[in-house]
Image (cartoon, rainbow, N blue to C red):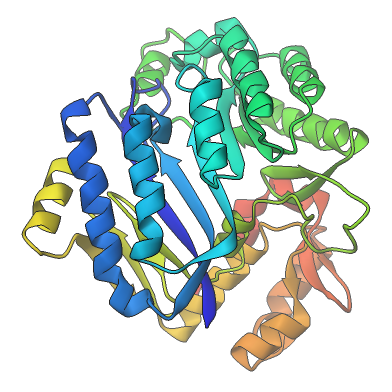
Length: 388
C-alpha cells in the first residue's frame, strides 16, 4: 500500500488579513456545518481512487480551521477514517490563529489525535500585527502557546513574516529572539509578498506605506539563518527550521520537520479536500473550485468539484521535482533521482548544473545537488533554469 498526504482546507476566518490573498472568507458561519458534511462526502467520493493509499500525514489548513465550532472539527476528524484509511501513527497538523483557541479546545483536539499545532503568530510586535490586520495581540499569541503546552502539544510551529513596510533589522531581531524564547519545535519564516488587490497593496500604491525593501529583507533572512542555527535549529527548507536532535544525521530533514510539507517538496502524492485544495497522484495535478457555496452545492448534487486537472508529461514531472526539491536544504539526491526517472542528474541537466555551480548558486557533490547559502537568496533564478 502506497502512502500519501491528506490536506483539508477550511476557508473560514474571523476577518481577512490585509496581506492575504489565500482562498479564505470572513464570516460565512451559516455554511460551516454544511461545509464539513461536504468535506466528508468528498472524502467518500475519493475513496475509490485513493482507497488503496494509506494517509500517513494529515494537514488541516486554511483560512482558520479553529474558526469552526469544536463539535464540527471533532465530527470532521473522527469521521474521516471511515472514508479514507489514515495511519494510526499519522502526523496530524492543525493550523490555528491566536485568539481563536484556548486550553479546552486544544486539549480536546490533542486527545482526539491531533499531534502537531501550527500557530499563525506572524509577529511579536503590536504595531506590526496592526499593520498586517491581525486580530490577535502579542499577549494572546503568548497565551495560545502556553495553552498549547498545557494541552499536551509537544510539536509546535510558529509562523512569522519579515520584510514588512517600515520594519527595521533590529525589530526583526527582537521578534526572532522573542520567538526563540518561546522554544517552539519548528519555525516557518516568510518574506512578505505584496499581492495585487489586497488592502496592503492598496496602502502602498496610495503612498500610505513604503514598499518592502528587498535588500533589507535579504539581510533579515540571513540574520534568521545565523540566529536559528546558533539556537540549535536545523534549516531544512528555504523558509523552514526545526529543532535539531541527536537523531538527526547528514543532509536529510530533521525528525521534527513537517512531514506533510516534505511530501510537497519531494513531489510525492497527496490528496486535497475542500475549496481550492490541490491534489497530486504522481501523474495528475488537480485543483478544486474556490467558492464555498458552489462547492457545497456541487457535492450535494453529486457533481465534480474539480476546477482543473492536468496530466503531467515526464518533462513537467522532472521540472517540478527539481524546483520543489531544491527548496530543501538537502537538495536532490542523485540515487533517488535516478531510481525515480531512470536518468542520471548530469545526463539531463549537466550544463545547467555546471553553470549554476560556477555562479556559486549550487553545491555539487557525490550525494547530489543543493542550493548554496547564496542560492537560497536567489532561489527563483535557480528554479527558472530547470523549466522545460
